Length: 358
Image 1 (cartoon, rainbow, N blue to C red):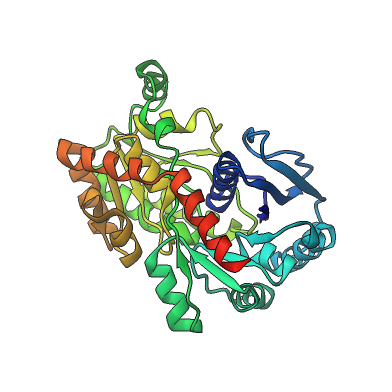
Image 2: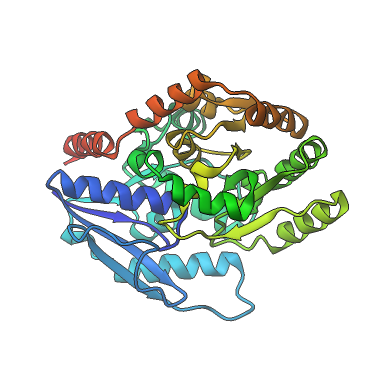
């Protein structure tokens, strides 16, 4: 089959990581795969090298005017990708987000999670990207249930894979470099934004820090299309009020991320909305104790391999347990779970699903 996978960015966000890994696994299975995306800010390639078996089509997307709103940027993104895309060249057109789904219209759509936007352009984009596609994939049963309840749509459930070997086989020397730089630390990956529960984690860390002053809070990642400057300013002001100084790394080089995760003393995943939790699954692969938000979808995905918390106080408590409790059985179960989620299996299930649509 000739398959087009579409994303909206070249930056290291969860949906983009998913798109590239799935594309490479489909190509390894013998499929003809092209990834289409927008090259924002002059980007001509993705945040990491991509297997040459995957064709890349990166559509130039220059920066807009300084006063461009998020809604205007989204509409311009849809127009740019839609104008460049050549749907007749493919047997399967598979969009991984609402921007690319709006750009191509009738397609297969992976709904990673359900958003609730207040900006009119974003709300319309989100709705159209759910109702227009002719077939849907979800990465968890919980999100598939939301589609069924809210829109009467039946989705195919195909869980994410995880790059298990990358996170499970880091070297002691590479981990030591992070420990020498950061000491003991709680890590979260995903940046500072509302959906990532950043303010709740800040409150939790302030409580944890009182009893564990030698433990830092480290935040990695943060590439996003949206403007979270106001939220970031509130977060920074609250950190100052609490008298704490988290370490904000920003985007971390792809080669350095596994050792950063594996060197952490605990991994915090306080997201308020998720479809699977790929970054948290990578933490399990690395053998890092995991504390996640108490959400049905995360119970579905992680079961007994994670600790769950619903409030900042509960997060502080569970992170303290993660820092102090040696639980080799939980850690071993986490590695087994992560190893079971392969991109090869995800690709095979996608191929079978595509076959039912052609």
